[in-house]
Image 1 (cartoon, one colour):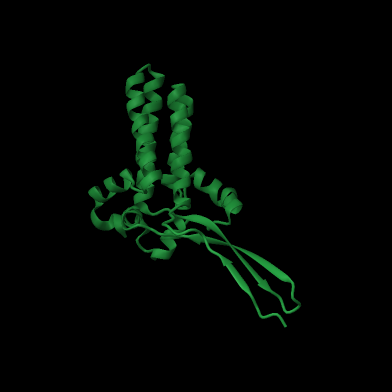
Image 2: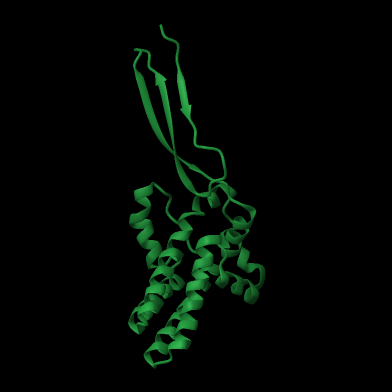
Length: 202
């Protein structure tokens, strides 16, 4: 009888942040045929810098493994939101920016996340077999509230013909969203901690 044989194809070495890698296992069955199993694995390597940023957004209660799982999904909302804000700035549209202010306000009100987070939880995550997002902690909700004020002010500025002010206000949201997407450092959470102290990390 042919002895059991296993071949394991592992992902290439090197740090990965929240990516999915495919591991294929091929082995001989008792009948001599080859059976192949495919498993989707999440390879994570959360840096101390990113873990600290998540803690300061209010995710400190999660263990390191959970933070590694959420490091990539938590980028979805700021990435999509920033893209939509930039479109509104390019169009100089008070209506578009006002609508984005309402989207941000939904995140300030709902602990389950803003509208974009709900889109991710109900649809997008299933395409990648990713976990649902955790509840939104207070520092992150505060950042949504700050974005609401800035976007509403930007929309009003464009409406009254103050284009430069509109670009400055809306551009600050786009800049903050870009930083959040790439590094998980959240300006709104930083302001929350400055105002309310270390409660921002709880």
